[in-house]
Image 1: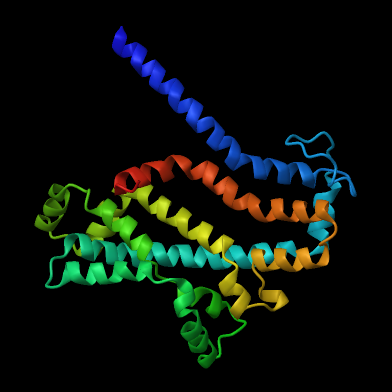
Image 2 (image 1 turned 90 degrees about the vertical axis):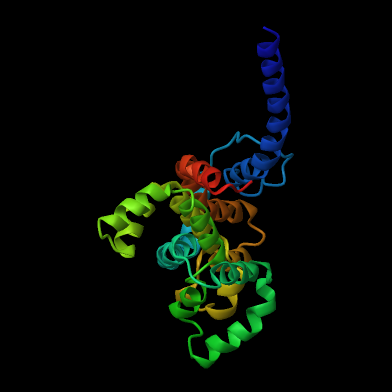
Amino acid sequence: MMQKYKKTINKIFLVLIILPMVFLMVMPYLWMITASLKERGHVSDPPYLFPTTFDFSNYSKAWNGAPFGKYYLNTIFVAVVVVFSRIFFGSLAAYVFAFIDFKGRDLIYFIYLSTMMIPFYAIVIPLYLLINDLEWLNSYQALIVPRLVDAFAIMILRQSFISVPHDYIDAANMDGASHWHILWKIVFPMCLPSVITSAVFSFLYIWNDFFWPFLVANEPNLRVIQIGLQAFTGRYLTEWTYWMAGTVIASLPPVLLFIFAQKYYVSGLSRTGLK
């Protein structure tokens, strides 16, 4: 009885800690949605979190005020290509680092992971010069190629791959299965939550990236959603209702993706041992 009472107290204590944190994280988004639904000229009214007016015409005006459809297509195309590339090449590298033993494997893996500690701003100049020398400025290649492989994705996948029981690998080797077959038919399906977690991380990074697309592809027909939102902001800076509506439009896909993939996201992180 006392043990059950202690568990109840612990749950209540955790809820009391978590609820304020959730409120602080959700509050800006609620205010953004509320501001986007206000009538024009009333955004400076006393703030409140839940809408009392529902002027959905702000969304149509924001959508028509900038080619958000083109921004969406550009961003989705770049994000999908990068996500599939990172999953494909990340799975190959993770399999090698997890199951193939060769001299210097751990050292190479450590060196590769250490690149995660190098700030992007430290390599942005040589990377930009390389893209310029290749004459890729204002092209999809500039948006995609430098981000095809990611050390963080490889780390997540490797940590998940090494949790696969070696009995499956040994049995497949005894049956004469190739490494390619073992990876895609055995290891990859068993680690699907971690694969989805890596894909979600990559998608959110590409969707929210502003600095690199701003440098290499700022032409109107190549703008991704964040660059388009910045240009839209410059056009409607004083129209806060339209600006908030545009921000909601830009932030909706990653929010929906995280909501629908959160089960796999949590499971994937737990399999990799990340805190």
